[in-house]
Length: 99
Image (tube, rainbow, N blue to C red):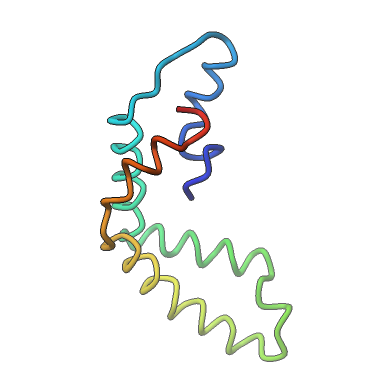
C-alpha cells in the first residue's frame, strides 16, 4: 500500500525522464488519501476479493475458517490503520526513495 511503486509511481516515472520535485506536502497528501481509503467499504471488499482470488487460504487446513477470518479481520484492520496516528508522515516522506 505504501511502496513507492504504488504511492508515487507516476512521479518516479517522471523522474526517469527528467527531474521533478515531489514535495513532502504532495507525499503527505497521498498518504492521507491512501489511509482515508482504507476505511471505505469498497476497498475492504477489494482486498478481501484479492486475498480470496489469490487462494490465500489454500495454505490452511480449514479453508472455510480462513475465509471467514479474512471477511472478519480485513475491515477491522484496515479501518484501524486508517484511524491511526499520522504523525509519522513527515519522516516517511523524507525517507521515500522517489522524493
